[in-house]
Length: 253
View 1: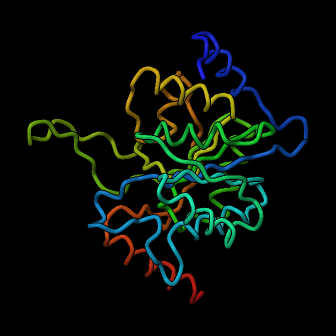
View 2: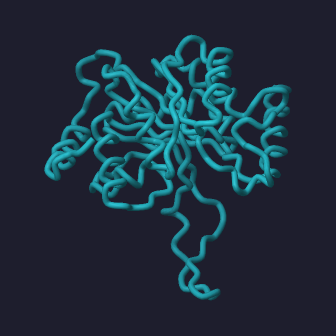
């Protein structure tokens, strides 16, 4: 898909306009990106690793499908995992799974593959990391509702640690912590805006680490909604132990 250069600017204005005034419930698609290589997992596939008796991906499927704000789910995974992901959708997605598609070589390519598989009815598209199994409905719903008003919203939490910028092994700067947030997912966008942003990013060969950055490259400033410190991303083997402890704590409440 190729977009004219002027189109993203029009989409920025469109996404900035309130979409909530009509009173109608927007159709929301959610893309679960689960196509990573798991390089830092010591040979484990983090998406399909067992976590308290269920694969990591199953948790996101179950929670997102339970959200009243989400109408359909699309899973993006590696080509060799398509059947396994489809099986999990049948078990945990409560009939909201609309498709399982193969990802690309980069995060942006994988996200765009999922976005393009979303229903044409979708006014908003949420993108969630399959490696964040402990997201809650509260975090999901708040991001969706904010994006319906602002055009884009990102779940995030304030940074606790002191952050240093480092060059050649030496500290160059300590940015004020008060303005620093750690981005999480879901990140929710006007459907046409995220299509344009991801396409632009890929065509220009720009590497981005999350989907919000692609939108920011067009000059749009997403709103921030409350994330959850328990909404961790499984990146290294130790994270599975941390996630298991969180699940155990939740189960005792």
